[in-house]
Amino acid sequence: MIMGETPRQRRPRADGQRSRQALMAAARQAFVTGETDIRMDEIAARAGVGVGTLYRHFADRSALIEAVYADERDQLLSAADTLRAAHPPLEALRAWMRLFVGYAATKQAMTPVFNTLSGGSSALYARTGGPIVETMEKLAAACVAQGDLRDDVDPMDMLRAVYGVCTIAGDRPEQAVQFIDIILSGARPDATKPKLS
Image: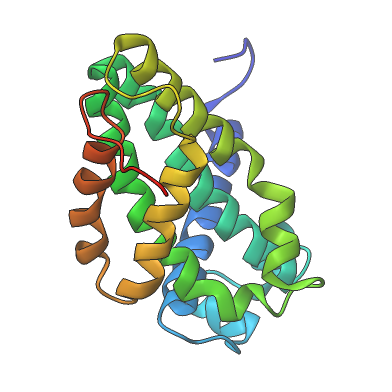
């Protein structure tokens, strides 16, 4: 605590953070369940705060949508650091790819909402996707260095394969999780590479 600062002076920051998290949770729940056109005042009501509080945190609907997406992405990114510290490289990659399935399912459910943004979902992903690519590349590079993956496998091909399976699986992401081991098995150094004619 800063000298001269009382608990009462610090409370608004904590309250503000709780309000922000409640607003994002209410918005996320609405967006993933298909409430694309939910009004801002309804989100505020579900979060248990006033509309003025909502607009203090988010200038407009687009800012709220982007904040919800950024929060999902940031959780995925921070999980990579935790997994790298706690597990061998291949296990960290496998666990992170499973988390990616959940992230992809949420992202797909929110695509109609993202499409209401200026430039649509493609513009949002183009602006924010770089850190996910970098994280996948780092996780895969650690596996290659450990001898767990071949060095001729493009990490992005693996991620695209998982995302493609997520797209096909739709609202059943558990099906996509099953394919992670298949993808990783095919990228192992001892995997037989297919002969292409």
